[in-house]
Length: 105
Image 1: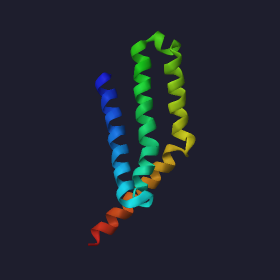
Image 2: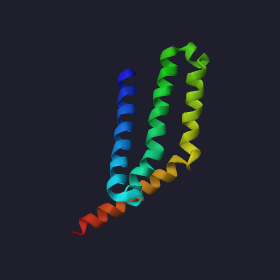
Image 3: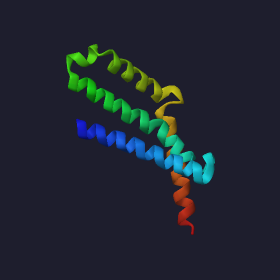
C-alpha cells in the first residue's frame, strides 16, 4: 500500500509539474488539456492515498479525524469544479482533435 500511495502521489506531482511547464511555455490555453486532467487525476489519486491510510490504520483510521476530514475534503474536490466525467470527456475531445490534426501532416 505504501508503494501504491507513493506511485499515486508521484504521478499527481508529475502531471502538475508538466501542467505548470506548459502554462509557462504556452499559456493557460496551451495547457488546457493538462489543466482539465489535473482536475480529476490529482484529487482521485490523493483520495486513494487517504483511503489506503484509513485501511492501514484499521478501526483507528475511521476514528482519526485528520484522515476522515482529509477523505471528505478529497471527495469534495472531485466534484467542486465539475464532475470528473465532464473533465474526462473534455480531455478525450481535446486529445482526439490533436491526434486528428497531427495525423493530417
